[in-house]
Length: 401
Image: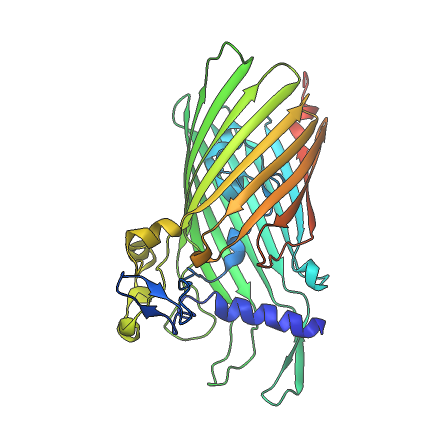
């Protein structure tokens, strides 16, 4: 049974995330200009891409705050959200390691995401960051068309990232990240048409900016506002065969803000919010899809057109934005309690969940936990899963720390 579940997960990665495939074939256009299923419910039109593991939030701190992170105070996991924050980090050197079980609620124990990140501040104006993301689908028994076993494979994907962050002024920073992406889901296996599956390889870049400003308040000991903008996973397309048709990476537009309020030396509260949107073509709907060429666009062209290509127009484009909000309370910068909420429109995937978590910090060592609670009947790969992150702030070893 577990092998069947693993195979289903692999098929999901190989097909459901292919932007050429969609479930809109049974939808019809009504007189109001919108598409509906045959039962009269709004037609689902999910935006999908290849290598979706690049968008998984691994950091347990952000995972406990509704997946916000673009404007949060800088730590090594800024590599995923907004690398321009790295130069604003308090410590000169830090490393984080995260382990996220995947599909644990289905009884799979060897499907997981591991994430290792870190940074080093070169001086007060610049910093370097690195990231290694590894996603394992466990062990899968491949079979032929007759169901006879062939070989046992271990599908996996990884990303290697290097970032440079620099202060452009006292309040404004910029960051640039380069990425190498490798996706080996079923290399060496043969499709029904005779094509041999290969490992997919792609390159991408992130561009990010941060504005940080101290706010004056008579009722607060300290107050700070951080606003971030991040364009992530901008790069080449990817394919798993020699077919000329390639799939888009999950290029993403993200904007976020965080307001930190220090009430006194012991109590600090952060309120954060993020807005994200995939910058890839919206799947076509209607009778003209057979001749639609939007998936043949270049990645850069698709980024711009993705804000105006939804079949139902502007009202559908708004539905493609995903919203996250989160709260974080620290006591004496040693104990944290966190909560958040993630919301995605029902026609664009319908993911809605509450997140909870806590954090502990002592000297150079930090430990974060998060737990996800779905608020709909839709299953989530992180259902009933506790994930955790380890954080090491080596700057605490410095004299005077």
